[in-house]
Figure (cartoon, rainbow, N blue to C red):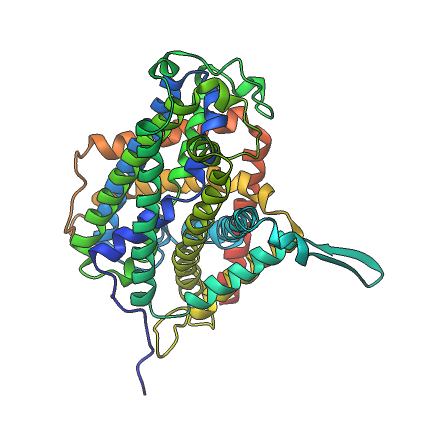
Length: 464
């Protein structure tokens, strides 16, 4: 009987680091400065939020590095939670990612990339939208939706290639993103007509349209700013999801996680400092809710042509993030299907490329449906909160497994233990609680969606 094909360990240190870097650097760093400035009111606190969020992400990366090195399986956090807390909890995480976080993030990235492509091409996509009737009902599909769907299809097809090829693509993307953000930062400081005095002024007097008064100032405002920064750092954990395809995971995973997060923290803090230096907090706070501070910075540096250049760069950046998001999230779908349902169609890999192609396709199909329905923005409000509920659970899993399985081989032990993992768990828990208090409805809906997974899991177990 021929052996059942499985995923291959083909991602080295550079490719593994690039997956994490490319997943983190997307559109968030260019979009969140405005809302964060309004949340905290001053450049100093805004930069502090970026630093705290970065350090929290680094603590998480160092903590999950120990788990990934000890349990180097596809699905990452899914595998850690299953080992520590059993199938029901890991299924809840897989359920949340497969049906909320993954499709919502893929759809949002596809739509964001399409918007930037449209801006960089003189609104080319506006000419391809159409409207018709279906079963007597009017149906309209915008050019942006068509562009988003096209991009999702292209990136899905690329992700059906072997992991080693996608690792090389991720490496090229990471180099492009780091170079782009570094160039904008350098340009703002060296060639921009900024003012150091901007760091001592306030952005609280800006229009801050769309930012609720309850999320301005104090602990609630700082927590909201942290959530905004964590959105931009989102993806720091993504490398663990492809742990089953990383070479020498005991060494590569913790090193790639820590190096990639530290690099991105430096880039983000320096980048946002350059935004404040060039534009000032008041101008940043007065930007439209849908505006990108990155576009405003490049526009200030090179004039009207800057909008086209910035939009083209942002398109490339967001498209690259879409590529690695599809790559990593499909591994959770694969692990979930293989564990809970058995070796089903979704839990198999292709014979030639050793890629979970069917899991890749499922995530993209759901995301495409969200693009057409236009509901991904609503789901996006829930998945950051839900993600951090499970991130905290994964952090506590490290302590649980140390006690329960002391003989488990751990090639790497968390740097700064026990302070680093404790800080990660405690600050993450505070952030979850603070978010639940300040946005109770969205938090309750997010938790309710996850709670549905438990009866589904037990029904499936009974059936099996």
